[in-house]
Length: 161
View 1 (cartoon, rainbow, N blue to C red):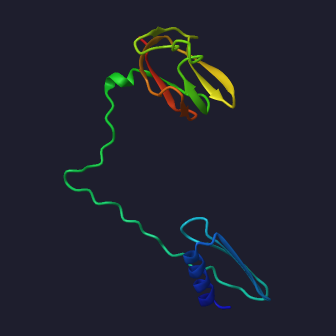
View 2: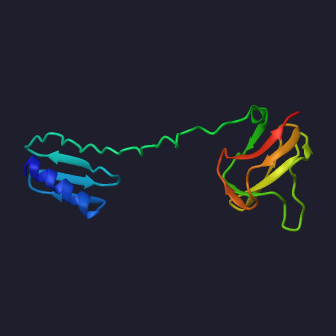
View 3: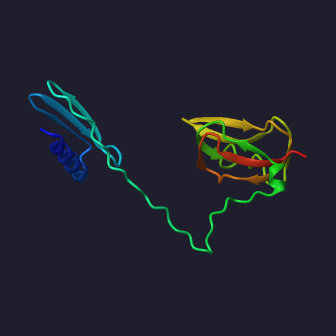
């Protein structure tokens, strides 16, 4: 089996959609894995030395922006820079109240002190109370009730003054 045959095999496997193909012959073993867009080739040759095959270069063109469309970063106001963001310490489900028949822990505009419970996050059937580490006023609640949250996801904006 020469380099050209191996290249044709790689192309065939890539087009077929197979995840992995192993080919063993008397003097060569070839494993082709296609977990991504470009195939990975592992070869073990007995009595032969094969060169590493060059991988095809894939070029993706970026969309051309017209004169009316420009890529802009979101503008942050200096007012928001003064706020403290409370972030989720764990992955789970965010709840604004302890039980469906209980009132919300906090509301927008409510003054809080350090140690006040802001919400609970359920993780693996355990309800973890998230307490405030700062005193201030709730400016914005960034997550809807009963929605999933990720680690380090912003939950609240607090004005510390």
